[in-house]
Length: 251
View 1 (tube, one colour):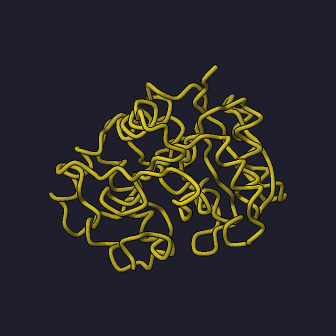
View 2 (cartoon, rainbow, N blue to C red):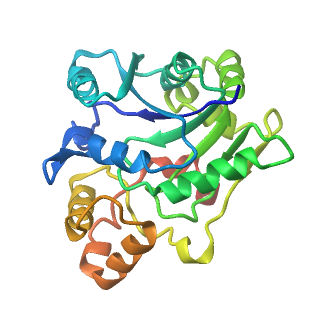
């Protein structure tokens, strides 16, 4: 039986903005904002927060338990194993990787990528929108067979691959059938930085969330807001992004 589960990798130990996932906007931590937006998806059967066993992450587990959010704890550095074990705990056959530093993820994009995966007659192992950057960073979604992720975990002990979850899958198209989904024209805005790595990013996210009456706003509305507020749009464009070295468009 097919079960589609989103795993969200979060931890308190961010080097550039420690504890960012629990920073509050409007009385709700970023983690809560992210989960509320994920709940709107029409394709996810379950959501599980995957954090590490380090004591500093107790606050994440406590929050999840208080809010009846599924939580799994595993290795701090072996994110591949942590992700795999969280998905297996949830009896997932299809995993959906959502990143904890992407609190504004639009469920419409999640559903687009999940449906692209499940409706693909070529039976892919991995479909994502982040092999090449066309969507705004912060709208990243990866969908994959849990069996393929498990196979990748059995093939590598390289610390870099283990630290970055699906990286082995993404980097081995001769082993796995992978596909990138490019953004339609209205969403093709790779210059918009909607993730949270630094205090500048947090300023941008706070301004966006504060502008809307609730958490149901879409990427289209975010784009309109950013285009109408160039100072906010440009506030974090000079922040170095570590993920770029793993993208095809950075070559």
